[in-house]
Length: 293
Length: 279
Image (cartoon, rainbow over all chains, first blue to last red):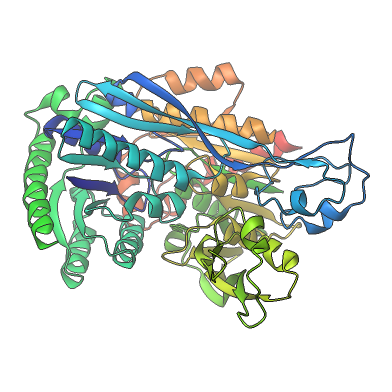
């Protein structure tokens, strides 16, 4: 079984539109949306939710006013400034470290487990999808990402599917690290802008740091051909393979508004052709990279 | 006054709005780039950096000579950053530590002292009348909120402070938006833009901070973003139509207030409207 994660560093380079296009092209796969705090893949794949589960991660301190003697020790101990002078815990500030709970001389602080999101197993016209929704302002996005990746793996094993295609989050922090650790490869989607290039370089470093093989593709490549050349040069220097170039094309927005993949919207378009080529080249490179393992 | 620029969805134009607003205002303005995972504002502002600071967070180190493996540190740590195995070994995992200080406090043998883990760097510089600060998360570091808090500690109360926030709605975004006077949301009129805007408005409501909306590439999609803004009572303060020239200027790192006519005035009006709403 192969697990491929699509990441970008910078947001808005086209991860999800590309992921949806791959969902159309790929066979025998499980789809997984690991961008748990702004998941969008369901807007194109229109899932029928088959299973819904609570995600519990972390605890929050709650002061029991009946027992509290207002000694103030918890306020002194809290590194997050989450406890007010009137002994209320601000749940947004509370890190869930439990230090106040442990040291309270009156045992006046409860520490319930949070339900901070939901995760789902769904059926789509492209096959099964594992996805999630982290509650607004919640923590533990990394744990939720790890959980849905495990569930996607389980599902692939049960159904005898040999590919997991995962839409990753932007950035290089906690949820991205949780998305790529131990994956077979990442596909980095970049764009030829000063910020796209800058962010791609950081996410390449991240993939190297965690020793995950990385491939590159350039979306909107014709927006700035000089920077596309610079990206190519960078890839060469780092021994990265740039697998494809997709034109700057409003068709992606039009397809998204119809809730369609670009192939469903217009499979003859030059952008659709470019993605088909990219996909074929990705499959070839993935199997080479699996053989090397 | 402190405002933060946020979006839910990535790539909608937060950095474009933050940098052009700062440039249009031009003096007595601070720009703090709190998208520490992927900071980009400096690519447009081109500040001359005069100071770089390494930011660290405390993590435990155990003196094994003093440790009697009582297991209290393992018991208090909620993040599995200290583990005592079968009363024979104690191990620390500094990358999982949230720096709560619980283990050091609970250790009866005084066997735990604080060492540090690097979170990243902060750089400070200037361009004309703009004071610029950004954080850069160390590649491999998972926790961005403590670095964001440190970037925000550079806020000067006598200036107009603009915070460029990261995408999403989870803890790094909240760390960038909380305790500000106004949140400017930037979106695009597409299904992804709308979906993530709804999440962002949810976060703003939770923080109970006034907000307004910029619709970028305002003519590429449909009217659902505007309908939603109207229903939620979020004022649309600026619309930027799609223009390949803007996309190309952005790709080169150019500022639209400098390169395209009429935009400086538009951003100054935006500034006035924000001040009016807050006051």
